[in-house]
Image (tube, rainbow over the protein chains, first blue to last red):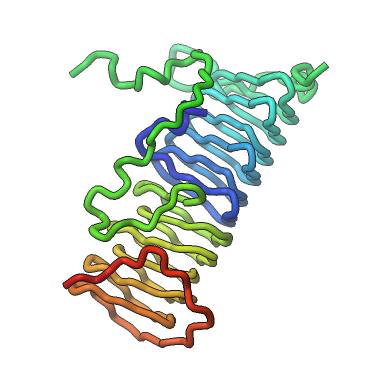
Length: 135
Length: 162
């Protein structure tokens, strides 16, 4: 949690606030409220415990503790914490899914190939994520 | 130039998040010279949008909000809204108290009060029961004074000392 909020400039969407629309920017974003639309940010995104997001998200990295519906595309790490829930496809370079997290969707890994960025879709199935669910 | 000091040291990839209880003072650079008046910001429920963030759409809810970046759309807020210096807001804005130090194009409707700071630039219409304007504010438009429905508990009214 500190990882995202420790940046010098983090925008906060607090609990009782609801946005319908698009967010674009260059800094970090912490969502505890509701958001419907899209997020496109060059920094890190934290969807907090009370956050409910229905949006496609593009960011450098993302930590999900709340509820996300939509496709997620991160250049670095996707992390879903035990309270987190992600319904949607994701593209990431590295993933960290904690026990108890809920993930439904496709996972595409960005391969660290020599030439710049090849976002080749890997052959992942929704079942693959189900293995990570609690026993 | 440092070779690989570009990244923050605490953001090593693969590092486990450490659950420290100590809260970090993250928003220290919030009002460097943007707000000469004491910023009414109890940090508990304050939504905060930084400079480089642009939002298009509608925002509803309660709590306080500080905006430093761009916003295009409608606000409907039960709480205090502060449009900081450098912020650009376009559209209809409804809130309890509105304090403007940035650029606004559109309609401002407050149920409590409106304060225009000396750096404010407004084009449009204001509806409010109470207004204060600092010297230097640019306002192009119309003001309508509405009847105050309830005496707003003005906890920290930015006193206009000129």
